[in-house]
Length: 154
Image (cartoon, rainbow, N blue to C red; front, side, top):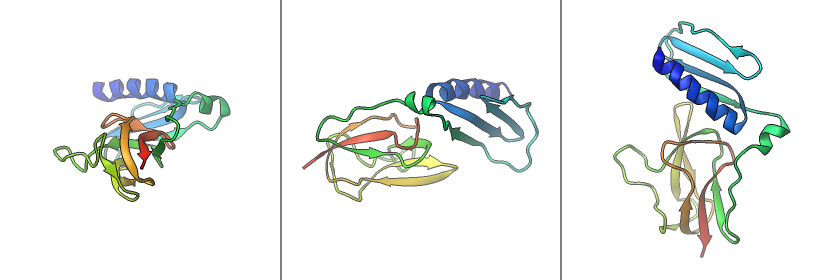
């Protein structure tokens, strides 16, 4: 129970930082729902659930302005996240990363994974060139349209 409450506190700080209005966390039979406008729901037993985290992005313009801005150097192309999820550089915990900084990337190459709702979504590079910068740490939560990588066209 204490782990769930600690995670809820961490998620509340994350939600405030990125302008998310609502988060639900389920861990076994424990569930907590946090809503900026609706307060905190009590812990409730949940039947047959898997650990899950979901987030509803804010819809107001003021929250969208708070989103982190990443400047891509002039001429560099970007790889962006198509969804909210968890960023992974490799296909598994013990596997080598798909690509490292300095690697050549072809359009269509898988460069990372974004996990959303327990689905591993392979992110493919829309550009050809040299991977110059990975802007996200492994296992970090990313937002929709967040820049993940910079590619220098060749």
